[in-house]
Length: 522
Image (cartoon, rainbow, N blue to C red; front, side):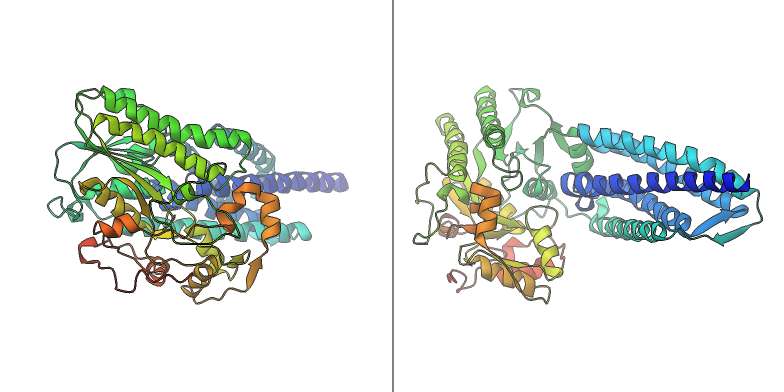
């Protein structure tokens, strides 16, 4: 009988450990894919409460993983473990409510949460009789190792504890970055590129990397802002009641007074492979939004004064092995290259607004560097870990711009009455990819040791590899000619600012472009 009980107990514990492993794997995927890469929770001030719930739940999981790996929780300790598991259940329910309040979950995330809940329920069902048996024994933490399984669960526990600490630090950091309303900059001290008009600014792509920074800057300077977004919950949670959030342009009445439109909408170009379906998605998402904006302008009783439409330096294409002469805004596109055709199509639709008397600025962005999105966070992580790499031969140009200047140039374009047509939104200091990788590593006190050959990247990514292996030596001719003053004209200063995680508001009125800022280091 004792042997039978031992076998049953062993089988039960093995099932419990299996469910914990499943829970760990699914939870890790949910954190990395949904919370980190898609929702970018650690960069969103509105997600502080959700992050706090995650940190608490992960701390509990670390105790459960390590505790069950090595001990039997007998007597009063069984009650303590039951209380922790109950607390985890309450935290999860609170997390569900917070997610429904602040953001629209994609279908797969909802399915994954359902599976996690079912798995956790099965785990509780198996553990309940075990806890009951332990509770009837004298109080003790009985050391009961389970061989390699104990070490595996310990690894899970350490990993989830590290994630808990990381989320807790994000909560503290986001709390410090959110000044109380009474301490926020008053509208009486606007940006030097602030256009003093009572009308609103309409921003598409406002919950994206550049868009969210732009909206925050507009609100700080006293602008009325309308945001077009597919996720109204996230936008309202992020921007607050001062911003009018709409999910369709049809919700904007014809009598609405709109002074400027900034079109930043569009999925990331670098990411999923450029399959035929992906190309259609990238093209239709940007072009359809631009077409809808022009239709809105026709419908308004008074069209806006200016449209700032985001494009990219990919407009100029990228062909390896050719002369890398400096490119200003007069350079032509390269028909037949997808990135060039995509940008040209967006700009073509944006120019239709000119027939309505709207001043159109086609902003061709380089790689925007900043915290909270874009390429910089992952590049910075690799550099800090000593995994920065030179891609291909490394001599390809790497046009870049600091987030402060990306926002500053949009504001400048909105306010500068004579600026129209294409504008290269890049820093005046041009560098190669190898120089960029080395400077990024140096900003963290590291060096670049690795090289990634071009052939594997071209084989794996196909045409999308041009974004990494070929470049455009782009100059901000129009911006400099019209008097824009860069906050971060040189790469070393920009990367130093980002490495130090400075959160100060850009002071564009004090920024000047050094005399040597146009020096080409290619």
